[in-house]
Image 1 (spheres, rainbow, N blue to C red):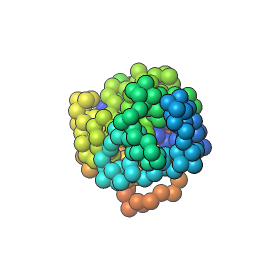
Image 2: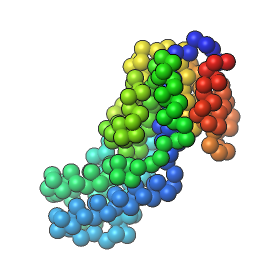
Image 3: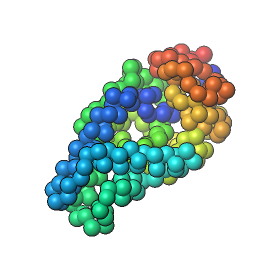
Image 4: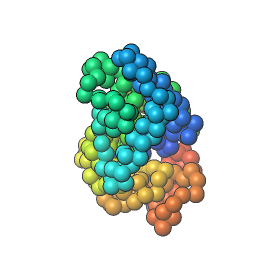
Length: 246
């Protein structure tokens, strides 16, 4: 790879931080329990099956936007969820109750920590020590950027990043060009001297290629979009050091 590389940007989920189906179920359980308790405090009883159905329907509604590379904020997601519950008008809820519902909805990762990907901290520290500029480009889903920042701080890796971009804040998602260009602008970096590292061929590799960045695919499993070809493929983050020196 070009030895003039001075900037490395990373995807978050399953590139630096694990996001397994087991994690997803833990987060869901936390949300449902917290929302049920908040509504109960307001004197509202909800059927747990209805609440779970509303939770899952919210994902389906969000995905309609996500499939267009558009993001929506947490308040809108919560309005969709609450709007699915029979005889419940979110506008009639006390602000303190809404705050508790939002806390339950967006904060599960802070109470049920996922794991860092193997060697993530070592690689970030090593790159920082070699004076690379480091960025993060994250599609947020139900966990918004302000919570991801806290999570990175609790992991002790926030300090390694010179720029952070979150889809809920920019209202566009990878592979949209805007989120990549916004990040490079933060870092004052050029696409041709930058590398993006991610586990998804479409969102990470194609998105970065479309703005002229170099690409490294962290391969986790056989994936769709096999026609999208990265510049390099790795199976462990530590392999980045070898790539950057060759």
